[in-house]
Length: 122
Image (cartoon, rainbow, N blue to C red; front, side, top):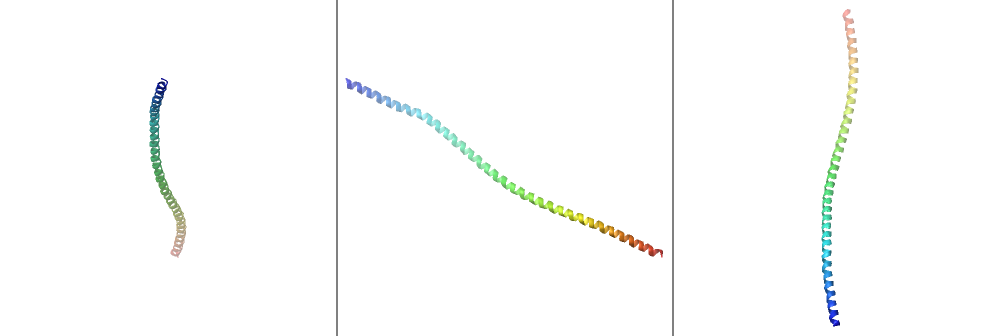
């Protein structure tokens, strides 16, 4: 009778152990599923961030190229302004020279007229 009691006890413990393993498997499946969902969400977020970073990098490269073009245009504009300023200075000098020449020519014309009038009086 004693052996019967121990056999039932052994069967009881075996059933409880199997039930425990079964329940433990169920308990770990739900957290595992949640963890997998979180990992998937993190991977999706990382992929989205990578795409945005690549787009930003392309945008930065485009901006850098536009900045180079703008810098070159600014340098050309500065050179053109410098040439225009030099041309204005030359034009001002030419105008001053022309004004002096005109005064000189007018003075000579007056002298010539005076000589002509003097000759006409004689």
